[in-house]
Length: 530
Image 1 (cartoon, helix red, strand yellow):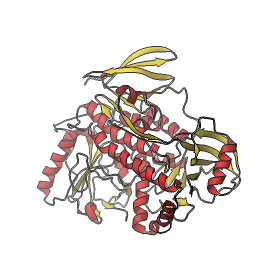
Image 2 (cartoon, one colour; image 1 turned 90 degrees about the vertical axis):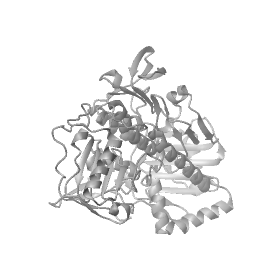
Image 3 (cartoon, rainbow, N blue to C red; image 1 turned 60 degrees about the vertical axis):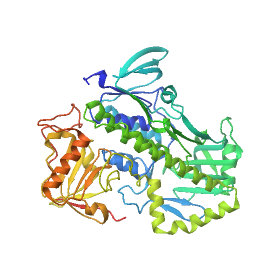
Image 4 (tube, rainbow, N blue to C red; image 1 turned 45 degrees about the vertical axis):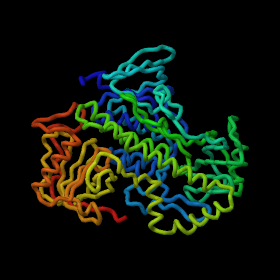
C-alpha cells in the first residue's frame, strides 16, 4: 500500500480509547486522524481510574509515571460489610488503583498523540461511510458543511451510541436496566476513612472514591427507584446515598451530577471488512468495579499494532481478525463478572445477602482467592488462550520482570517495549538472537532467568508489542532453538530478507542504524513472587 491517504486510519471518538489507539498507530508510523464531535475535551471526571493492567500498558509506552503523578493511589477496595480487595499485594510495579479523572487522562493522551503527529479534528461527525477492497470513503460534517475523506481503515471508538457500529449493522445484544443509577463529584462533610469504599444495602449499593484533593466520586445503584430522565438534584442524591450508607455524609459543593442507565451489551462482531469498533462501542456493562475505560484501553493496545502491521504489509494471515478473537471473550467475561457482582451487592434477598456476607467476610480472607479476585479486577489475569500464539506461555501477560545488567543496573522489561516493537528474550544462550533481517520489528535481548513455573522453564520468549507472549519454547539445544526462533519470528513478522526495513516512523524515534544493543549483555531476570 502506498504512502499517503491510502495508509491513513480515521478514528471516530477522542475519548481515552480513541486517543490510546491513535498513539499506538502513530508510534508505528501510521498517519492517523481522530474525529470528535465535541468542540473541547471533556471537563467532567466521568471514568475515574486506571487499574494496574492499564498502568503496565502505559508503562510500556513511557506514560505510566505521568498518570501516576496526577492520580491518587488506592491500594485496596474496602467493603463496608467486612473484608477488602487488596491491590497492594499484586505482582506489579503499579499495585493500586490510580484514581484519576477521565478529563486528565484525555489531556495526557491528547498531548502524547499530538507529539506523535496525530491530527485531532473537533466539531466533526461521521454522516456515513462506504468501503471497498482498497479502503473506506467517509462523509464527514463540520459546522454543517459536508466533505468526503478516504482512509485505509475506519475505527469506531465513539461510545455506547456508536454511529460506526450502527451503520455497520452490528447487533448489540443484551439488556438495559430501568432502575436508578447516579454519579456525582462532590465534597463530603463526613468523609469515609477509606479511599475506595463500597457499601451494599438491600436493593442498592453506594460507592465513594477519593480523588485526593477533597473531592469524592459517588455512585449509587438503587433498584427501589425507577429510572428517571429528570436531571439529578443534590436533594435526591443526598437522600439516596444516606439511605444506602446509613448516615448523612454531608454532601455539598457538587461540580458534576448525572444519571445514567446500566447496560449489559456485547457487539456481535468487532470487525466488518475495513471498519472496526473498540471500547464502549463494542461492549457495555455495569459500572461496578470501574472496568469500562480500562477494558477499552486494552482493546486499543491489542488492536493498534495489529492494524499497523496490516497497513505496513507484514501482518501474518489472520492477525487483524485475532483482535476480535482475543478481545471479545474478555469483554464477555467482564460483563458476566460485573453483572453477577452487581446482582450480589444490590440484592434485597436475605439468602443472597447471607451469601455476600460469607464471601466478603470469609472467602476473601483466603490468600489464594484474594490474589485471584484482585488480579481479575486489576486486569492482570488476561490471557489470550484462543489467540494464534504457540508455547506454554503464549497469550499470557508478561509479568513485571526486572532485568539486571552485568553492572547491576535494573531495567524493567516493559521499558523494552517503549518503541512498540516485538522483544525476543534469549534465556539460555549468551548472545541475543540474530533478528537483523526483520529490521526494527524485533528487539533482541540475551539473559538468564530464575523463576518457578513456565517462565523458569522457558529457554526463549517472543513478546508482542502489547506485552503479551507471542511464542515461547523450552528447547535447550542452541541450534534447534535458533531454528525455532527464526520460524516463530517469521510467523509473526513475515519472511526475513537482508536489509529489510519497515515504513518510516516504525518505531518512533528509533534510528534504523542503531538497534537496541545496550542490553545485549548478561542479564538476570527476576519474576515477582505471586
